[in-house]
Amino acid sequence: MQKTSIPDFQITAKVVYVPSESRPDEGYHFFAYKITITNTGSTPAQLMSRHWVITDALGKKEEVRGPGVVGLQPKIQPGQTFEYDSACPLTTSTGSMVGRYFFVGESGESFSVEVPEFYLIAPLALH
Image (cartoon, rainbow, N blue to C red):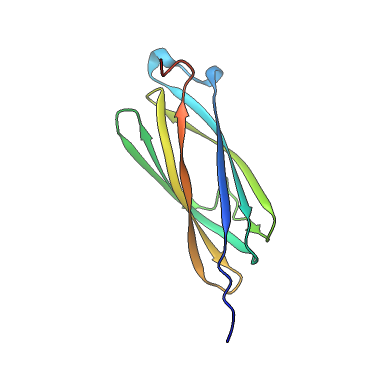
């Protein structure tokens, strides 16, 4: 019997509001974020595509799908971490992002990993 290894990844996000790129009086709030993807499993996998759902404070949703992340489709080895920076503009001072990464394992199997919801909150937006 062949043992099947289940891929295991840990994903975290850190968000920063960018005041120099934001124009709150015009309803434009700019957030930068860093995503950290760590392969905590025992098999390598390649990140092939992504799907984000971005929700603003009014409940307006925008879906973003595309190949890889920031133009890359990284192969992440066991114990390895891949990080990237990206950004998200909103018309409200708060919002959230949640998503999913789609991978291909070394045996050719496809699987997805959920990106836990994280929040985009401008300073002084909540008082």
